[in-house]
Length: 400
Ligand SMILES: Cc1ncc(COP(=O)(O)O)c(C=O)c1O
Image (cartoon, rainbow, N blue to C red; front, side):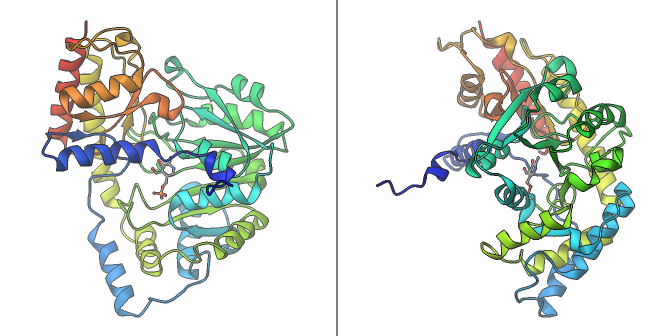
């Protein structure tokens, strides 16, 4: 009898975490490594948020809280959805978890039965298909195209819907491509979804605030209010508020679903960290101006990286609207040889040879379900990014 369950055997450890760990190990061993693999801002959590956490400790906010969030945080989330997305929710429609990842995990585990299909546009955030598989569902990936800036087309969405489709997982701005859907593009997709009332929409809005060039962020229930009753709108403080380690994510949706997520959480982790919840209250209710200041830096880095990668032999890098990722195609180097004679047969080899030769850690596109490509996170000091891009240019230039 096997120790490990069938459910666990269906999933793999997160490859992005694995590559970040590998880069950290090489660095610790003395190698000059520039890691462009991590999915987190390099900025500090703002001081007012840290102070709120310290105050919470001093005030004795150190005990179990309501399983799915303190009333003060739920109120801040209700206000956020109203203010930023024009969406009206009651506190009973809000759930708070230990990061957006737990909310997503709970939502899928609470709703999927064997055979249920979940549509996931590719390339996708690595955890979606694994969580779906763990929950017993079947991920149905739809490959998008670089020519479409990796955006899902309404025809492709419609073709993938079957009577077994339970969810569409939607992520804009996207990890790993940075692509974000404008209102017209989003409406074309919601027009399809309106025709299929059995399909639920899980929208992962984690990168909402990280958009550039005056791009207007929109979310499905806002663009198509008739989808409100079957949409779970997920968000969190990790990325925009530079709070990845604090582990607070949240979602809003129909009460039945929110209650089910809370039930699962009550039997696993109970409440998210009480101190981090108070910090999140301050994040959502406090000053927001640092976001624009951070975005100015992110935009400059995006422009730098896109321009430098497009000058590398064999790479093509679209310019995305948001997040802090770019997703260049490396189709132009596949089949070439490194100076040591190794054939670049796919994007995984490209990434490992790049790390070996130049000490630059990127994540291969096949980990995100669409290659040959790779993901660069530009949430790294600008001078390191510049150096990393020079090394990538040198590596690509050395391939024959
Ligand atoms: C698209 C996307 N969704 C969700 C998450 C999870 O966020 P959290 O750190 O709040 O769990 C991430 C983090 O990398 C992400 O990129």
